[in-house]
Amino acid sequence: MSASSLAAPLTILIAPDPRLKARARPVRPEDGAEVAALVPRLFDAMYAAPGIGLAAPQVGVGLRLCVVDLQPDDKPAPLVLINPSVVAASAETATREEGCLSLPNQYADVTRPARVTVRFTNLEGKTQDLSADGLLAACLQHEIDHLDGILFVDHLSALKRNMILRRLAKEQRQKAAG
Ligand code: K1U
Ligand code: ZN
Image (cartoon, rainbow, N blue to C red; front, side, top):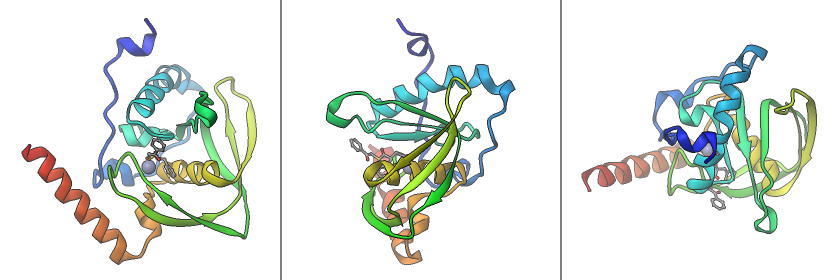
């Protein structure tokens, strides 16, 4: 039995929870024990959802930390990104449909830089640069947005954003009513 399976599963916050709009603080060396305990639980919650990324603020933890796994060819490829930031972004943009575990069942086309280089600290404390395009580039930008309190709907027009948020609220009310 793994250590993470002994802890209660993490609950993913649903918009408009105000904790999703807050800017997370950088992870510091003294956060090591909390980060080590949180990472396996973030992966458990992400795989269970299922999703391809999850940021700490989505589970109510205001730290600049996220996990990603696109599982290419159905093989696990877990990434832990501590204090990630975009250090280079292409002028060329790409538009793709995004979802969000904090806005269940809501999808929209989002336009972002097509290629990015993300600098982060890994679990061993080493600084790494990761260059990405395609879905990984979109996912990394989506997760870093979460650390700044930005949701994918914030990239849309006010009209589309409000439509999605109203639809989400209605679906959540219906779910709560059973
Ligand atoms: O941060 C999140 O809310 C996770 C989100 C990440 C994301 C998806 C699409 C584009 C950019 C970022 C998700 O994982 S939504 C669910 C999803 O995309 C998915 C679920 C199962 C299999 C494949 C994808
Ligand atoms: Zn999201």
